[in-house]
Amino acid sequence: MDRYLGMLGLCARAGRLITGEKACVQAIRTGSAFAALLDGAASENAVKALTRACENHGVPLVRTAPCALGNAIGKPERMAAAVTDARMAARIIELSTVE
Image 1 (cartoon, rainbow, N blue to C red):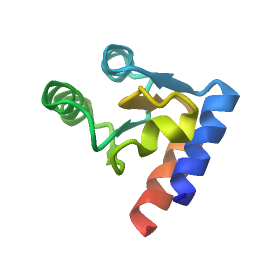
Image 2 (cartoon, rainbow, N blue to C red):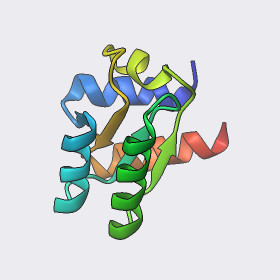
Image 3 (cartoon, one colour):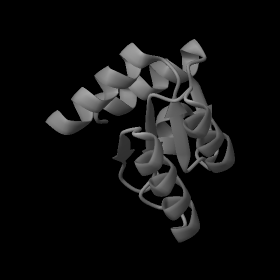
Image 4 (spheres, helix red, strand yellow):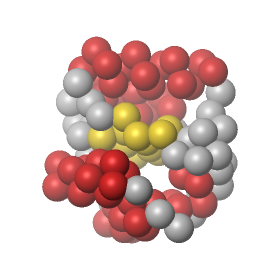
């Protein structure tokens, strides 16, 4: 497993993760999300909605391999997640660019 996905699981256990497309877009728009993650198997509409929200609000977007996001957080059906802790988000972004 990629190290940033392990960090994502830690965020979920710490309560610093929002999951689900609509909840993530809302968190991005309100400024409570510091990073967003999108699964490679997400629908075209979900990709479009999250990408647009991230671009408009300056939130970094990390794409994962298909089915990796949900498995990392223990919810296999989830295709989108947003990190609500600035330091955790910075570490996830750092680890995702290294790998």
